[in-house]
Image (tube, rainbow, N blue to C red; front, top):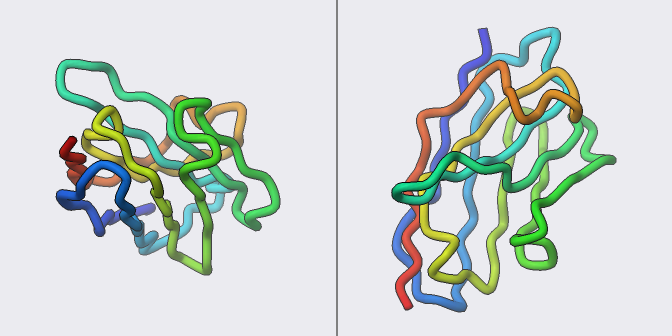
Length: 119
């Protein structure tokens, strides 16, 4: 059973950086893609970034492209967030999926970590 645990959230000033981590305690046979989503207060959860298991294929939401970098090492998933903006505030979730085509409906979610960007 896939268990995802996020860490690294916190409070940061606009323009600052944060690095989120996600520990995958057990890769399910069908997990080939890992990703990050976020949910701002009063809004729906949205896709942020995803990577194939090997790291050779990555995808980003337009809103974070050139500012965020997703990476993976063994059973750890990372999200390096630079040039943070107030609109990046939200709960960030780690997710696992069988493919890029189904990343919008992941098979597993982490519990989330809060990111707050002060302006």
